[in-house]
Image 1 (tube, rainbow, N blue to C red):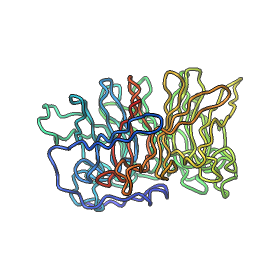
Image 2 (cartoon, rainbow, N blue to C red):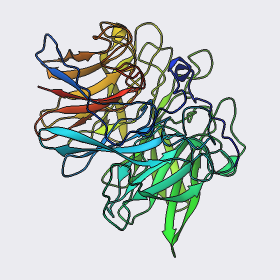
Image 3 (cartoon, helix red, strand yellow):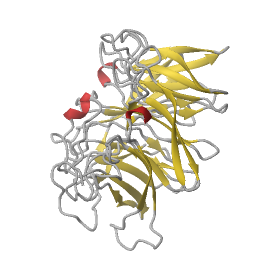
Image 4 (tube, one colour):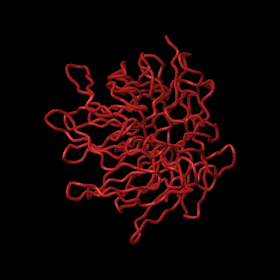
Length: 440
């Protein structure tokens, strides 16, 4: 097998502590608990501290919750390391299930560093057939990444280390079909087709930068076929989509690009919010908003969400001028009006998609900032003509190394009781990141 090379696709990744040689495999994972009380009376709990072994290391993505309230996630490094990846493992998929009043952690799959993929950066999602789907950022033979599914073994698992069965649906093997799926989830349409984006690659019309593609995966006769529906050119239409796309009720798709658009941000463009609309001859891209000169935010890494009225919400990663923003786009008469809702400023830029509760409050994470400069979990509540910011947890409250974790890249999820769950990609008791819970 060929040893896979993994290059982080954004410079901030270089600051993360990469996993070292895998630790000894343990049969039972103890749930390490670190609790702090913030001034808002939130309770923060570490549900699992990654060891860098079979359980994984450095979870960059957030979590997915099933109907029973169980949590699923990915780790960029770690897993059972057979020597075919750089020291630290090729990445893993895991699950946390309710067990009594606590949680039980189970590793579901360890990537092996060749054709099955290397280093998942995005979440796994639950497909219409009830199994897991996701992407890896590299590997797949040519090292362009993969799209995969995971299903439980036919026989019931009797140990904590019973591996699920992976099926590689597609390997990115040519720059023309895309390179490096980023942080975005894949998404299904009603016919069972998969859609997503890659951060790099395209059909050769790409200008300066990574560019990227929007693709569709169609299932027929037991196999999956990829078709590129749109090639980003790296100019006014956008450049480098990290996040995935979301559907509206009419079948249009929406997403963000981290660069491109207008000419700001040192000539690279500060990023865009776009719509992809199906037409008889394919898909047409419409730029709904192009960020410019960092005054309204810059470089959206995370994706978008809708509210019940069809308005879009997202956040920018910054950086520059303390103007990382949470923003809203409101449709009216075929046009969209951009409104910056809140400047994260010293609270750090966000690399994740937001979520909204039934009351219209927004929740998200910041990669840096917070009271200790290691990131935060925040809430934005509508208040009169504006929004009220509350930090629900500031990472590194437990000293250095940060026992509560640091640098949350991914989204948060919310259960029916108002509890929040997420990951921190670094630090923690074992220094490989954590899964956490915040209870009101």
